[in-house]
Image 1 (cartoon, rainbow, N blue to C red):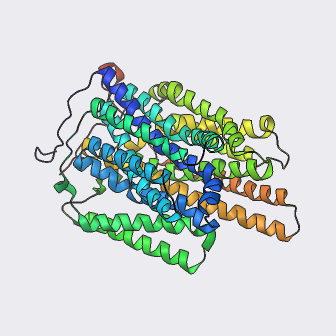
Image 2 (image 1 turned 90 degrees about the horizontal axis):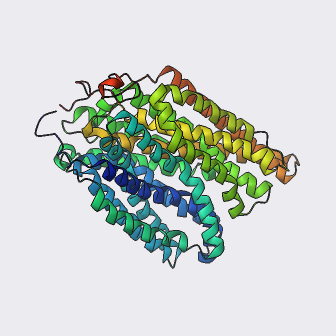
Image 3 (image 1 turned 180 degrees about the vertical axis):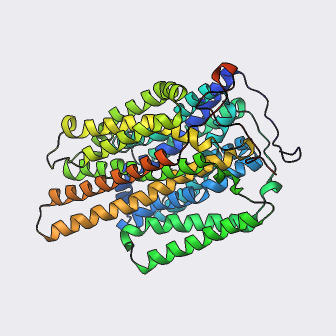
Length: 500
């Protein structure tokens, strides 16, 4: 790395400051993760209050997801160029102000627009955090522990959002699912300025690729938008096929430009690492399958077992506790002892088993017999899978590319979730419609559709397992006795990844 392109090193932090900074960063991410599920619980109340149609109501979620998924990769690279703390704080301000606008929205149009802006803020805030964690905790054992904290927030925060959404909506009003972000956002911003080291970044001139920016943002946004419309349009519709085709053309154009330009927005050297590329593939298939449990599982409890929103949140609470315990206390020890890849493989087996258990839930299922075992098994899988997976995804990134690698793995989560939900929701709905036409009772028709979704979701996680076995590599590092790393530590930076 040459002197003129090297990022300015932040002032070293004390051990206590680093861990406090980690908790502050994860609080900001938790606020964003909660928002992705807390809104779903309140949608019926929002629909009634603002007179949304069924198709219009979907845009309360879609507007956020399009901005969020479309900007994550760009936001991560902006963190490398402009400074990760700066991008984190800008995103926090945008997200907090947009939350206030959401809470005060008097009309449908204002709420949808505010949700889009909220997605912009969410992308800026969450895209750089994993990269900041890797830079703050270079020592492998501490890094595994810190990523475990982040992994709990990423894997368990959604369940907490279901519970919080049910409580706030039932006890007060839907406005409070957005208003709670205001004090959290302000406090997180103040503490981040005090505790998180300021890194100056490479400078925007090192990645000022305006055509490339337009191609990646428009391509990702169009792709996410098209996937979100699949449930209404169908996979074989002209609109869906055209949208996907144009998105692929735009994203291919972006990649071709990154190969040829001397000043790329996204240096493609990052993908030379098998662990970076493989971990992102594993994440796509894992998230696509795992989202089945939260989405179809919540529908099963609501529409088949007649659970209230609060009961659905409480049903997921035990698995959230398991995710917390394993992410925060166990994952780091296992990764340090056995290595990230070795820990990841059996956890994917647990996730597959949990989804298959959901595929046998009866129409008159009970929580203790039919729901708890399945959610606990997937909780074990998620609690142990996400920290090593994130560590592998960051293992091939140089200090100048950590924001890009962080944004990439977050983009993978969003794209995997969007594609998985569109695919599995469509398959489940088609199966239910066929059974209804054959005269099958409503509960059985719905449940059979959900079962098909669980089985396909388990198959997707099975594909992730194959990628983990045949693509990912055990990361070799210097002996732990030397004080530099162990078998799970990131590889040393070499000429393959260095900045030209």
